[in-house]
Image 1 (cartoon, helix red, strand yellow):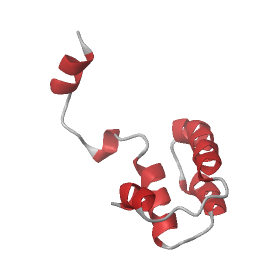
Image 2 (cartoon, rainbow, N blue to C red):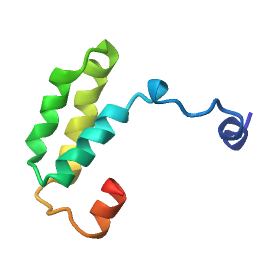
Image 3 (tube, helix red, strand yellow):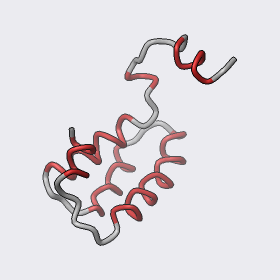
Length: 82
C-alpha cells in the first residue's frame, strides 16, 4: 500500500494515540511564556509511560539543539504556537 493510501485510510485522530502530544504541548507552553529551554527537562518528571520516558529525552535534546542560542520569534513562533 502506498503512503498516500495509508494516510487516506488511517484511523481518525485520537489524543490517546498521539505519542508526542505532551512533548508538543510543553514546547508551546514554554514559548508562550518565554521560558528557558531547560524547562523542557521537567516534562520527563511528569511522564508515567515508560516508552515516553525512554524516547522523549532524544526529542527534547534534539529540540534544544535546534533552539540553540536563537531567539525564536516572529514567523517561527507562529508555526510553533499557532
